[in-house]
Length: 173
Image 1: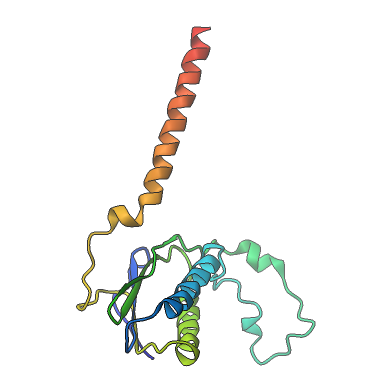
Image 2 (image 1 turned 90 degrees about the vertical axis):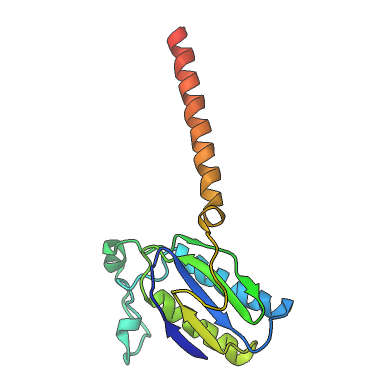
């Protein structure tokens, strides 16, 4: 699997995969599960390089290691913000992600995951992280990517209006 990094905007990052043949439903399921699992860990702050205590014990026996909660408590949050659905076109798959404040270790974990998936389940010839893909242009995604946020904003506006109506009713009494 050839891995290439292009210009990366962590808040607007496309991840592209090229396979030798279009993926079937079963292969798509594996790929989507890998991305969903990766995003879920990122959303929960799992890719925080400020607290990698077991990793930093490299070459040292981990049995009976004293895990210190202080570094985790001092670490700034490192959270992924959003991820779009995996999309398919011919031999290409792509996924948009807002990496948020997660650390670069998130990309290492994704690469390792996709490399293993490529070795055992479906062949991935190329992985492109960031940038654009000449074979598959990006349409304007502002509405599609943030549709859920629009619903949230509308709900908050409705709630604010209800609170204002209640305040007005209280003033009338």
